[in-house]
Length: 253
Image (cartoon, rainbow, N blue to C red; front, side, top):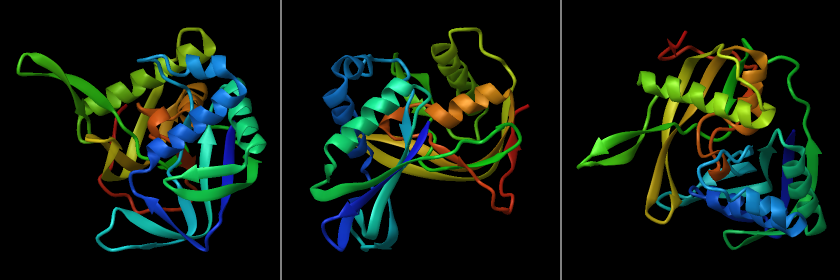
């Protein structure tokens, strides 16, 4: 299930900090808790994929404010939300509609519309682009301890862990052995670095890629997010129908 949430600002212009995912995460958790406290508790279980994802916050028009950690938005603000779990979707959307006033980073918005979006009929062979960048990590020894390391699409481990993460989510959703057929072909990539909590940074990648393999496995990524930290605002993609110049093509078969 996928939704477009459109927000009207009380001002003609509004600021949007570049590091804003944690504000959207807070909004989602608060609205879920207002409707279904037990579900909210379950979503806070550590080290378990949360099975929802969302895009970066966008605006109909935007302009950079040079030298500042934010951009200026104009018109409506909006973001996308996606989950394969109907209980999560129902609680979040009901929570939004019950209380349409939204405060984000000291800006006041009002929920104008919540639109349910049609999903693809098939998934393999399509081109996707990120609505929020994809994060993939691994653990590496450092001074006698294991330390989290952010992987890049230039490393084979990026593709291995991306696939294993998808299979883990598949088991959580379907309760059965996951298919193994999955590969991606990256057409374009751009690294982004976000401060997800004060002093804690995450390196992630805006990608354009083609996905191949089992339709149901790719569908898991489309609905719940590709990669890790989806509940922190990473890994949401859309089908990209535009023709793009292929840059730095890399694939895992």
